Each structure stands twice: as structure tokens, then as C-alpha cells.
Length: 118
Image 1: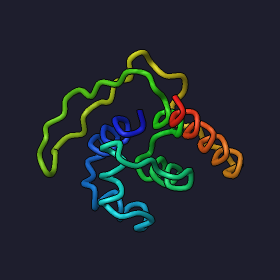
Image 2 (image 1 turned 90 degrees about the vertical axis):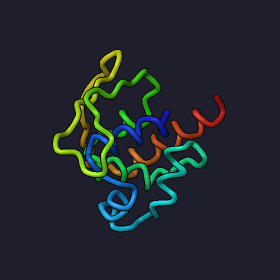
Image 3 (image 1 turned 135 degrees about the vertical axis):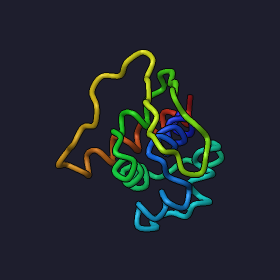
Image 4 (image 1 turned 120 degrees about the vertical axis):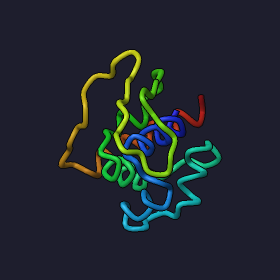
């Protein structure tokens, strides 16, 4: 689910909600990101692209429904080391870079619609 993966990726990157908002050039507020993480709201395709870029993760990672485990996390305001992120079972490829942002955005929108209807 997007909420869980977003929260895990943000923590792995060492960002607070406000830090992530700033890394996205304040495209969305920290409160909106919190709603995404709690599953109270779903980000638009454009916001998903910005989250993916700011967190240095692929859209596939954010949209994937496979199980996720986060290892080595110490929940402090500023961790001294970055935890490792384990995906169980392993996902296909790491970050995918596409030059056709419009097609990628369309694919994300379609996946969001399918997830909402599931």
C-alpha cells in the first residue's frame, strides 16, 4: 500500500514530514504527506512522481503491494545511520528512469484507480 511504503521510504531517507515537503519544493504540505502516510488521502500522479524523486525510490516501489520490512530503524528525530530497506519478496528493478513523464504519470493514475477499486 502506498501509505506504508511512503512512510518507510521517508524514514529510510531520514526526512521528517516537513523535510520531505521542503525536498519537494513545498508542492504539498507536511500535513498532506501525513494524510498519505495514514491512508486518509491518496496523492495525485504528479505528487507521486515528486515523492518518488525526493525519496529516490521508483514509482513501482511506491505503488507495489508486496510485503515490506524495515530493518535497523532507530526512531529518533535525527538518526546517525540510515537503515536498510528490505522488500519481501524482492521487487523487480530498482529505480526506473523514464524520459516520458506523461506516460509514466498516466500509468500511475491507472494504478491508483485500480487500487481504489480493489
